[in-house]
Image (cartoon, rainbow, N blue to C red; front, side):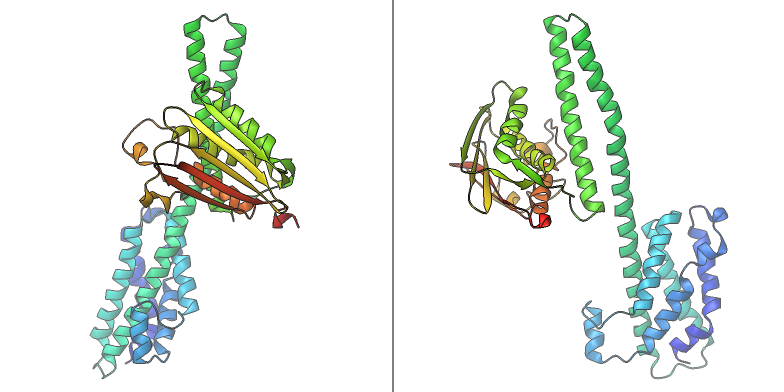
Length: 379
């Protein structure tokens, strides 16, 4: 008997054994129904049997073994993906879910070999095709499981970031009231200033975290463009960034029309992150140069600092999320989650602009942002 026919005839028996094995793995077997344990096992097996009956040339078989083969079986893929999602939902870990497929593979082969009167000349080919189908199902289930893990993590981070804002606001407001209502000596005022600075840094980190999660859960950052002046936003962002750093020496240069239709809140966020990055890595002098020049169709913004250059090997991943500098990785104190430049890139992309960075020991580091004066999303 061909293996595909055996699977169709014995599918209920095989699924019974799947259920028994799944119950031995389940985190809370007593709370799981029979339907939960069996899940998509029947659909996976029947889809695998159908897949085995499709014609396949030796060349296609070799290509499929390399992951380059013909189109997968839609029914098999859908059932396996749903299985991966549901196993994550009920608390199976990835090792347990993988063990289910290992057991299924061994169970089917064992039952087939034991009950078939004789193995025909196509037996080896049947086992190859069955293994291909199970491998495909396992890959789809694993991918779906991993996606659920990633989404769950992002939702957790979103909730965490959202809930952190309330205590941070309470700390900030209490500090302001303390400074206004009490006559504090110089030492106490210094403590209050440190609390204010720490609160600002924490609020910035929470904001970056929420933007990171929002971009992962959606399709990029949402924007609400309106007429604004980039030069005035840049000056305000520079004043705010330097307010708590007396050693900051900003240099602003504006040339041409700096007006455009952009999302002011997002642009301010981009400016704060670029300026903050320049101050953090600009060496002991805290010197930052910001220039804006406008042409008929676009506005060019550059932010420059003269600190140590960015290593060439790090330039390719500079805008990736959760990437931090080598100094931070060595354990020095940091107020960054490694999301600042990722947020900058997301803001620029949302406005259909571009961003580039150049960095060397002699000329320092320069970020160059080009924004179309009117974003295509506003047309």
